[in-house]
Structures are given as structure tokens and as C-alpha cells.
Length: 319
Image 1: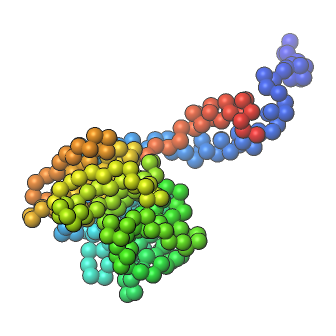
Image 2 (image 1 turned 90 degrees about the vertical axis):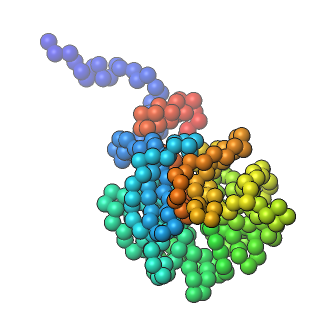
Image 3 (image 1 turned 180 degrees about the horizontal axis):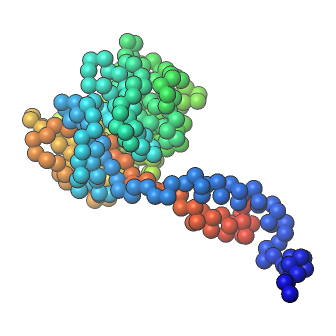
């Protein structure tokens, strides 16, 4: 005889309190949606964008310590390449006098015009906004990912870099010869370096620290200086008589890749912030002019997310 499933259903006791189940149905529905939308796999290899002085952009694999650059492939003509946060797109300047900004999807490698008359882009952490430099008149601009101008900040600015929370930009003001933090909501400008202490910079999203090149006039040498967003000195690394037009943090925040300009070349070097050691990772005879280091991004693992959130629910830490 077939079992009476109605009786079993009526007498079966759930292992969790009924009020707990009812109060978190919506949470599990959200988690199911995350599972459906999450990519099954994503590259774990760090990537490096770099541009050569004659206007060609390349993509390469780079080890997490920066010492191994391989699988180099040509992408397009242009300057100042910059990664989108998800690693699926890049932006760059046109290789011409017009200075137009393009975006390229790495799937089809077809450049699309984004902004007319601009240079030196940097993507916000959410990938929804792009900071760039414009001229005639000189200004720092913020556009959305479709190229619509959202905000303009007058002045001669260089090396704009987004904060990890996407609420501020760090940038060099050429007239005032120092680095400022620009609040995107209030418009407040906060100077974080002394006048005369400025240079190419980058903002680490993992460490929330700013690194920049600083010229020491007494010795005629350059340092890489690491500071907090409030301007507090963390460390200073002496490099010698070499200027770098571009520096980029490693995704984990323990290395910085930069360039050493010489008479006939400009080659990449890596600074280990833990030891202060500088090592060459270059090929002789090339003239590098820009670098941007992207971490090997990984999708959220849905099963791990489920387990973690369910543990929090059972402990009463998620209401």
C-alpha cells in the first residue's frame, strides 16, 4: 500500500524553527539569483596592459610578484590604456592629434569611440564612471560608461585615480604642484602633499594607499612615496636618477610596477614594498610609456556564499 504522504507531511518536523524559515525565504531567493547570474569560471591570472612610445598597446600575463611577464599580444594602436574593473574592457587614447578616447571589449577587440577630445582615463570601482583629462579649456572630467559628461573640474590636472569606494579621486594639480583628493559629491578639494611634492600616482584599492613619484631636487633623484589618503607618510623608496611616467600597484598591494627612463629606452621594473628591492623585468631596446596592472578576478563562489550566509543566519547575525 502506498504510504500516506499527507500524514507524513503533517508529522514531519523541520530541523529549523518555522519562524526562521519564513523570515529568510526572500534571502534564499536572492541567493538562487546570484547562483544563476554568477559566471562559472573567471581568469585567475593577473594581466598587464602596457603601451610603447610609438603608440601600440599590448596585453600580457604577469605573475603576482611582477617578475614574470609572458604571453604578450598586440591589441591596438593608442596610448594610456586602462582596465575596466571586471577586466573585460579597456579604454585608451587615440593614436592621433585629436586625442579621442575609445573603449574596447576584449572579446571582439573592436574599438568604439567614447569621448571626443580627451586622454588618460581611469575607471571607477563599479565600472560605471570614467575619469579623464580634457583640454580647451583644461579640466578633469567624469563621464558615465556611455561617454556622457557628468562632472567637470576646472584646472590643469594629471594622473586622476579613483578611491576604492568610488567617492573620491586623487589627482595632481599642475599649477599648485601637489596632490589633491577631490570629493565627487561635495566638490571639496583637499591637499595631501606639500607644494612641489607630486608626480605620477596610483591608488591601491586593496590597501587604500596612494603611491607617487617624487623628485628630490637636492640629489636630482626620484623616489616612490607611499602615503595614506590623509597624506600620512608610510614609506619612501629611493630609486635614483630615473623618472617614471606611469606607476601601477599590484592587485594585492605588495608590489609596484614602474618605468625607468633612459636615453634610448624606458623599461619596466618592479618594487617589492616589503623588502624595498627593485628588480628589472624588461626586454632591452623597448620604450615603455604606460602600465596598468589588473588582478586575476574571480567570481563569487555561490556554494561558499550560501554556506557562509546560512551560518550567519543560524548564529543570528543576519536578521
